[in-house]
Length: 96
Image (cartoon, rainbow, N blue to C red; front, side):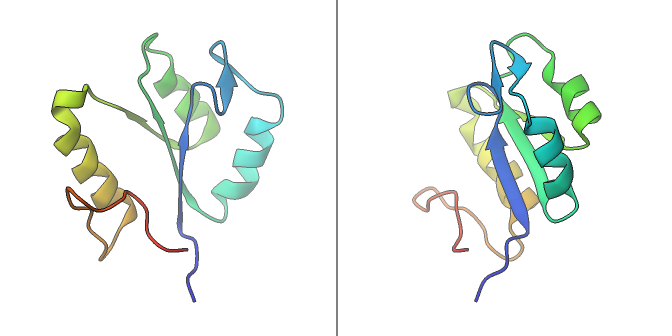
């Protein structure tokens, strides 16, 4: 049996539309924040994600360019997986 510990979400188009949080997202994240370690990923092209993360009380992770993918993979592995470690061929998920 597995227990969820982490939640990784995408910001743009998932939690927000046209750079505005979708109604109800803030309240739901507040409830989930007490249960899970939450991180939100984004390209953050407008540079507004960090203040939003502070307001929501969640970790914001800016996704780097594709050529820097190993750095992103290492961050996700360190953040969400102990002892799970992503590899070049493994999906970036673990059973839950």
